Length: 90
Image (cartoon, rainbow, N blue to C red):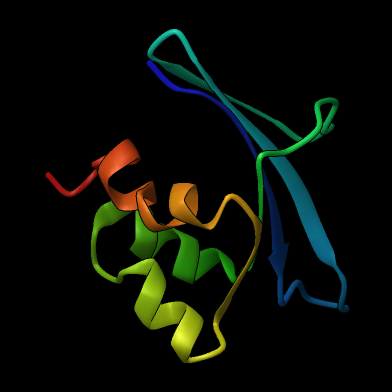
């Protein structure tokens, strides 16, 4: 099973700046927190609507990265697998 920590910086917030979220994937479950507390394996900088597209399978991470709409720092291979990990396409 996966044991990964992903930090997500959701940018394009009204008034500027970003919201920081932490996703911890362990033992087949994913927990989310607004207060990051662990060192991330991957950090994503993305707009909220693009993150939704990634986890629902509407857009791939490669395509968004090439268009400058996604920035990934850390385990890039993990980032490329996000659509498969979350699989919310149905």
